Image (cartoon, rainbow, N blue to C red; front, top):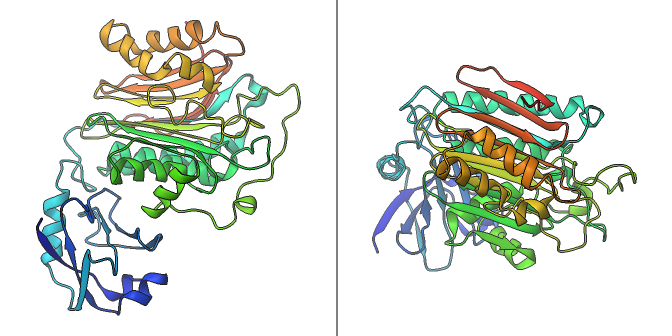
Amino acid sequence: MGLYDLDLPGQLFRGEAAQAAEPARHVHLHRGDQFLLDPVRAAGRIRFRCPHRQRRLPRAGFVSGLIHCRVYFILNKGKIRASRMKWTYGYVFLALSWSMNGSAATGICDSQDEYILLLHGGFASAPERVERQHLDVLKRAVTVGLKALANGATALDVVEDSIVLLEDAGIYDAGKGSYFNSEGFVENDASLMEGHTGRAGAVAAAQSLGNPIRAARIAMDRTPHVLFVGATGEATLIELGAEAVEDPKSYFKEYRPPPPQEPAEEHGTVGAVALDRCGNLAAGTSTGGTPGKMPGRVGDSPIIGAGSFANAKYALSATGKGEHFIRRAATHDIAARAEYLGVPLQDAADYVVRELIGDMDQAQGAVIAISAAGDIVLSSNGYGVMYGVGSNILAATVGAEVKYQ
């Protein structure tokens, strides 16, 4: 286990952490099993988190567009010793050596010109089920995401950040806008997968996470596991840096039972798939689940291969009645059919969504998908799916209707 010296400016310490660290301290971080220094990518900024204190510390710009790194540190636990020092350039070289991964920073991921971003805001059974505000937010998210991809951001980062924007909008069944279960509280699900590495993270039945997709990223980056569930899983991710809202009952919108004629499956699960300029793919999905669901019910959104899937060739995200997508392992099945049978990605998606799932009782749903070769696919067994899409040659575009030949 090696010992690395990192000079952290004192003003970055805030909240409870400030009580344990005087300004202008020099922090020694052990490297090894503790993974206290963990590189990630995040458009020209460094993210500081303190898992022991369960606080997320402020972001600070650092050589904008050059270095992307998250520093984790634990105070007063024997892992870090602090002594008064000043900021040095040693941190620059260490961060660079750990982050130069071919796609670490804005402008670094530039091995190809092609990039794609495709988002969805939920299944649409009929034109009257599509609201303008849903499409407006999708267009804004696509516009922001395309700019990041053009500047060299990774597909994984753009998928995560795009879903965060949709979660925060409060108008989809995800994040702030999540529907309550039959007992009157939220249980959120989310998953995230990186295609070229096969890494994945997910969270299910989370009651206090404002951005479940962020928690899924933490599960991926900070643990050897994939899926964390329930109160204990949520507590673990919060300890590792996931942010819980202070008052879930006031943060999440008030429960409004849908009218009897309103299908419960079409309430705005959100998802994203992206291809970056390194040629890498990623997929993610986030939802509050079916309105009025039984407590503890988990749908397809946090299940890798059902709600989300990505490999080196394809990235997919699903929305609809989760039980049917789980039973068919829908997103994995589509990717497998395209890869192993050699059928076009659109045909594979249509067969699974319209034939296999479409034949099941009340099996409404849709899938979005892209390929590393540049295919853009929308498939629905209803009117369509609310979507936003753009690429290096296509400006941000939104819609809902899915037509078939």
